[in-house]
Amino acid sequence: MRLMAPKVVLCTVGSLGDLYPFMAVAEALTARGASTLIATTPDHATLVRDAGLSAVAVYPELADILGLRRLSVEQTWQRIQDDSLFVFEFIMAHTMEAVRALFEHVADASVVVGYNLAAAGEVAAARCNVPFVPVFLHPMTMMSAYDPPILLGRSAFFDRPRGGPKLWWNKQVVAFALRMMRRRLAPQLNNVRAAA
Image (cartoon, rainbow, N blue to C red; front, side, top):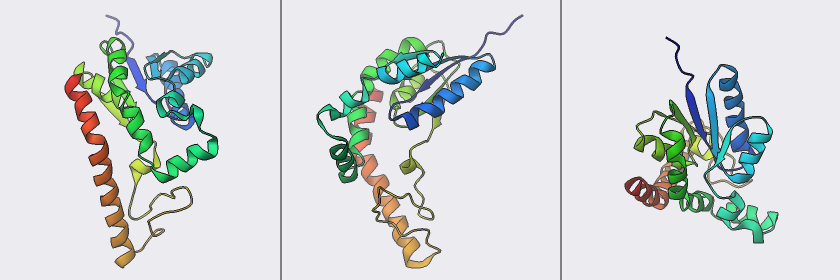
């Protein structure tokens, strides 16, 4: 009896730095006989297909999601510096439509691998009873009080504290950031999970 090749759906949204690691994983899995599909935005889906991989657009163009077509690069970076969570909030607003688009692709998948910003993969996998593997690429998702991220040149953190008040302060900043993320993002994600 011959086993079927596993089908792996990889979900990502964001910059090319969020896409390229998924393309590398898809290439490696395809070379080992797996069937892969990258679920992303239309502009990134084109890049994936041009590289000879399978892709489907489930999110709108990132620039459309963020409403950035009317902002300059400088204005966009200033907006991110002023409020780094706005990107997550705007993408979250389009997560339900991405979940719906993913159902047909996830239903027969062996596993779904998803970037934390692309929450649609996790929700669709849960609804289809397919294993989900989270991938953390964004530096903010790996925030550590001991080795905090550099945030666009300014930071509330002390750089690599050895202990004492500086470490205590960094732990407070991490706890505050996590509370803010939960307060701003959890209600939207929970609504998507309930509606899916």
